[in-house]
Amino acid sequence: MRAETEDDGGRIALIQSDIWIGFPRAEQVLDRLQGLIEMPRQTRMPGLLVHGASGIGKTMIARNLSRRYAPEYDPESGITRTPLLLLQAPPAPDERRFYMHILAAVGAPSSTLSLKAQSVASLEVRVVGLLRDLGLRMIMIDEVHNLLAGTHREQRRFLNVLRYLSNELEASLVCFGVSEAVDAIRGDVQLARRLDEHHLPNWRDDAEFSDMIQTLIAAMPLGKKSNLKVRSLKQILALTGGVTSRIFALVKDLSIDAIISGDECVTDDAIAKWTPVWSRHANAQRRLEKSGA
Image (cartoon, rainbow, N blue to C red; front, side, top):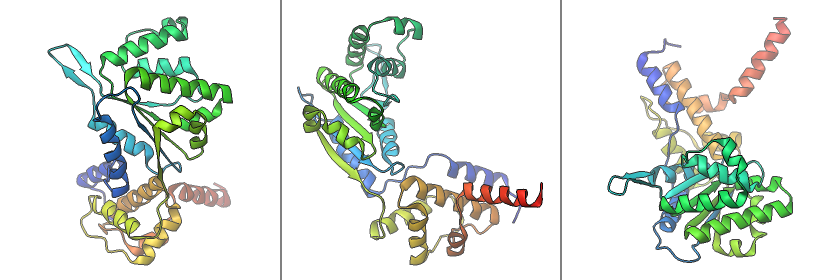
């Protein structure tokens, strides 16, 4: 193993940062979302429910669209236009907490103490007025399955809030969550009719998966091209369960090892020997315990 250079450190830092890979299934969702946000306003704006396993890439897609439609300051009006608002659903379906999250997300000047003193109705009026002034066109709620932590009554009230905001602002509503959240959304018939469903499945052993792996590895700042055999792709799929976040973590980990070792490419042998970082730490701890350290 050779000594790490300053250039190596920069490349490793780049690998460890958020990396967007525009593979077709992600771009397909982004195209649908872009169509919604650019759609002319109407009384009942259509929306989308994107669901799939935890770590399949829902949040990555949401953040990418959020960056594409970042707030812009209009010097003529003196107003910051915010076409898209990305929020994480509160840990439980709580209207007050949700309105406070919205106000915090848009930087509304007010102390937490004064907000808590206001009624839910007052917060609602303030939020609607503020979001309308910002020119909001889309509300994206990530981790919408959090509403399952509440009672059926609390879930219905929270869904009513989402539908109300969409109606009042004539803004598209987009929800991201695990597949269990689908039944909860369907509990509000009016909202379910308005939200098309888009399922993101786990990756399978097919050409799409092979293309994604090759694209991902090619995006790593390595000095040599990685030529992997079919059995290595099958091994990656088996190790990760076809979950996007695990696949990214595996490839990033192998790429960092390739830089440190000087191999400068991801090899079949490295994949065959790879174990998750937490497993390595656990094995090291067991060895220490056995040695009496």
